[in-house]
Length: 240
Image (tube, rainbow, N blue to C red; front, side, top):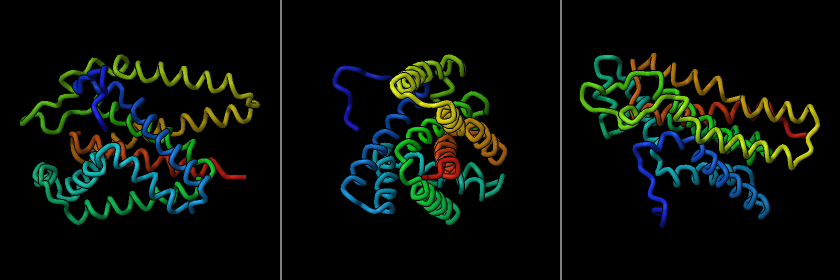
């Protein structure tokens, strides 16, 4: 993405805006889905393009983290750090990427009509999982380097506040402009909160497997949480 002309954001505090950035990426995916469906593209093509848009915007950074993390877990405790730092991708990393991509395509195709609603939610909770990981777990490479996020971390409540305020205002405006009955309102709330558990559980499981977190595992946590949330929403939201 090109550098902004006036605003000069500092990367060292970027984590606090990660959930909001995720929603914006999800909105890009939603618009692409709606546009291509309007042009009568098949679901499988639109699903693949939606995933490609996310990878393009992020530079594939999180999928790279997923593969490195899978290789690190598969290598075992004695070779974990070496596998995480190895620029080459192993068999377990390739398998993890293929499985995640297939699960995402399957979930998006099942969501169909509801996919544009699901994209921002999945991207939001994926980045919430990173914030939980930074807040709660030791940086895996502490002995060799210092995590930029940990070094500038001000605590969960302060870091998550900007994104939650902006997103809460957006949800309130949406509810105000759309007259939803009680059942639809409860379903909306349930869908919005559906990723809360996974955004806590997945970084916890990765921490148990690796003994900590690092940049790669933050990316892995994001991708796995996004995928899990898409799957959950594909179960919850059944097209009528």
